[in-house]
Amino acid sequence: MPKKVEITSIQVTTPTRDRLYRLKFRKTYDEFLQDLCDLFEKSEAE
Figure 1 (cartoon, one colour):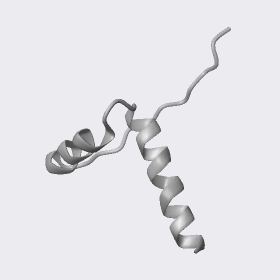
Figure 2 (cartoon, one colour):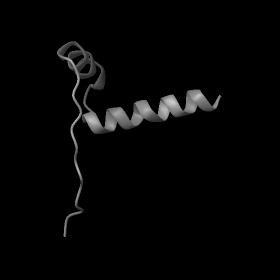
Figure 3 (tube, rainbow, N blue to C red):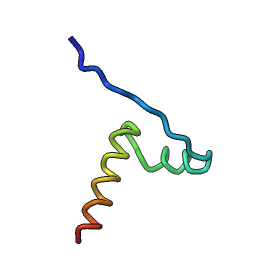
Figure 4 (cartoon, rainbow, N blue to C red):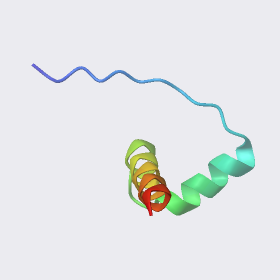
């Protein structure tokens, strides 16, 4: 049985969405945002 994934949505402006699209390359938005959160948390800990 496939794992159930809960999904939510966030709203961003069109310019922000376009910037995210250019930055994420071949990742999904979820993968990209997870990486971004990891980087932020690491920088805050330093």
